[in-house]
Amino acid sequence: MPVLQLNKANFKDTIVNNDFVIVDFWAPWCQPCVAFTPIFEAAAEKNPDIVFGMVNTEEDPEIGEYFEVSKIPGVLVIREQAGIHAQVGEIGAPALEKIIEWARAYDMSQVHEYYAQQDAQAAK
Image 1 (tube, one colour):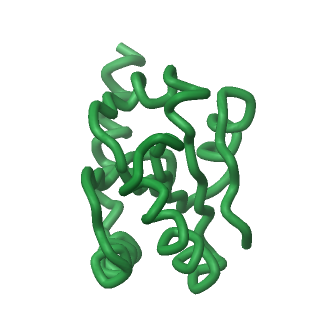
Image 2: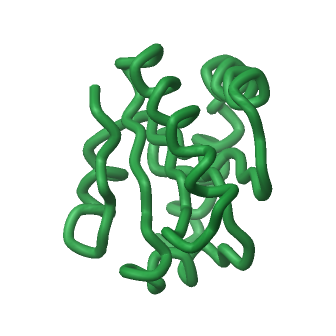
């Protein structure tokens, strides 16, 4: 699956309609970000069951602000609409592979429990 260009128009739908999304926050002036793009694209090719998307923080700063992205490059791993890992700074292909491996194995039961508690409190 090709890497999606995420923006205000499609970001929320992408997160809501896909169980596993990895987002790369970048900007065209950021050399480490540009250097990371081929690594990110290669990971997307190797993992067609995961949605990979890129947010240009220059064009859509609100998305980065919402997730409190203060430094780029930045990678956010989202499973079942919950951010489970954030990585800031340059990383290589082996590190990205390890993050993906970890995220695949991540036990989402604690996240489900947390949301159930939040829902129960909201219902009171």
